[in-house]
Length: 232
Image (cartoon, rainbow, N blue to C red):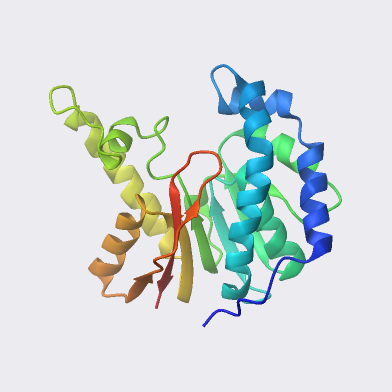
């Protein structure tokens, strides 16, 4: 049973606020938005901190000190979580992001703290981990447009392109297998309700026991409900 009394330390909360204050939102705007990036971050920067802190407090008692986490597609919204893991629990965090410019902005803001983002494909990571962060990655509309509309129930049967869907499905299945094969058991996966079907399918095929927590948390940037999956 998680120890519900544990919360993120005040020093870590101050570090998170400092990192967010250092971020170059002018450069982040076009990375996240085709237009209206300034307005986007005016609305989201505080929300990322508040909702990120709420999830960090939920994860804190569920992660063991000194362990290792793999974050797939880690960006601004993941800063509170990664800071909690590194600063409060002394964990190693492999934070992967395919957007080089965002990685540069993030690492500049995190200078002086033991937090680093990597311009790297998460599927190439060989480390063994006890926590996998896989949030709004498998249904990314930019990378997997056909898979995304099907995942969210917005696919139009008259225009849906199954030929484009199949290679996207294979790519996602390969990424899920590569990442989950690094997970030690018992292990924890943080993902969205929409993406949890990939985790469940992987566990079913391998006969691995899993449990999805009923409680969900709001994602600050995309809005997808986040859930926790215990494997093993």
